[in-house]
Amino acid sequence: MGYRFQAFSDVGLDEAFFTLALREHQTRQLPRLEKLWTYYRNALEPVPAAERKARSWYSQPQEIGLPGRTPEDDRLRNRAEAVIENDIAWRIHAMIDFLFARPIRFVSTARTAEARSAIESALDALWESSGGIALFTDTALLGHVFGHVDLLVRLTGTDFRRAARKASPHSTMQDILRNAPPVRVEVIDPRRGIPLTNPSDYRRLLGYIVHFEREENRAERPSLLSALLAQPRRARNSHTEIISADFHHIYENQRLAESAETPWTRGKLPVVHIQNVSQPFHYSGIGEVEPLIPLQDELNTRQSDRAHRLAMQSFKMYLVKGIAGDSLTVGPGIMISSDDPHASVQEFGGDSAAPSEEAHFESVRNAMDKISGVPPLATGVVQGKVGNLSSAMALKVTLMGLLSRTARKQVTYGRGLAEASRLLLAALDHLDILKTDEIDRGVRIEWPDPLPTDDREQVQTAETKLRIGVDKQRVLQELGYTPTDDGAV
Image (cartoon, rainbow, N blue to C red; front, top):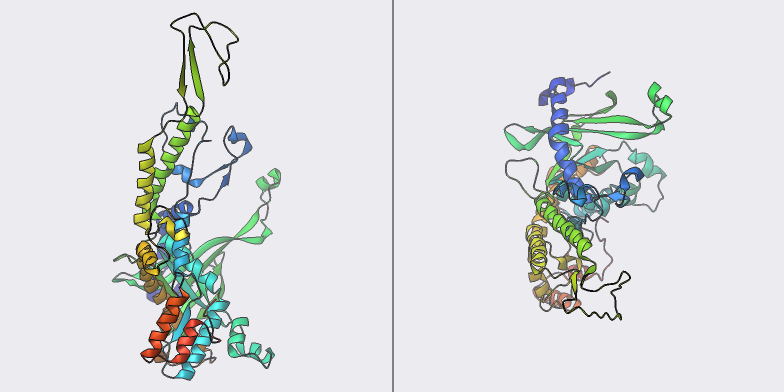
């Protein structure tokens, strides 16, 4: 049995277009996405013992950006002095830490206080059961590396009512949703997701394909060649999902494994698209790795050049003229005499200062700071005079670029999380677990301040809020003096 495209004829999906979409993704998008991930991750790759010679036991993927000099260059025969300083990964991690440093809160905008309380409790439970803060950081990581990321809202098939009957009498609906979630949110790796967009509007999804191969917990049936070589391998399975506004098919090795209708989406795809930074007229957004790759290659190249120079000049040498003797030794505490008036001992070699080289390193790193907006101070590395960092304002001015980029991403990622929350509430309404109207499914994301807070400033701010009439309980809640839910963790 093959793919059944009849259910997706309304989005124009047939066998020819499906095959074309897979081929275009594998030949155009996938190589580029893999390269972006490689530069971010820079995972060590073991070198076979027969190929090591004098080099280390591992190689690094970023070495591909080092230029080949001349055939006489030692690096072509022995890359032992290749130096890789991955300045991309720590910047990406700093951006994610500022974006999802602490738990976020999903605040309902429903019309009644009772509905708001029930919705917020349900959303916290469902997001936490889907992964919580780990899901948010995974979403941010994929978005920062690839430029965009997609979230899939999926019904799990869990019998919520049966779980409720078996639950403890003291269990709340939030506890049951957390332990037996009937719906969850999954992150789709852009290397696996193939969007089918509207030709007239790149922002509208008509369909979505998830396609990848995964290893199974069984050995592959041995072929004649593998049996002779005695090299058993794990069996691999081709997993494909085809999603539209009305149907969701799951295929294993091109065999239909699961088919379901999706009336709970009310004509929408259960897929939420998030752009890291908006890119006009493109489905994919702008990532943080791509603009740093040329500078990363330049930094690695100059670091390797300096390492090669240091290896050549790290030892001092002496040229002795006019002094006879086969056992002549030059070293500390040794005196040498000669009757030749032209005799001399000349010292050469050793590492010499290179101010222009140091200036070049600094200019490259400064350029990476400007492009990424992440200075070393964001990770606690204090360099030079940065003012009185005990002042919150001085710290904000120093990190202005990173804070502004974080605020912009709070809008793009927050919009995606809010839309996924609306889909979660729609699913709960369809399953008769939590009945809500469309107008009551609005959600606002409350983001914590990524910077450390000063207790004195917090108290002064709280006193000001009380003077202008802000509710006392809310002020105490913001200060952390009342029992409250921190949000999705």
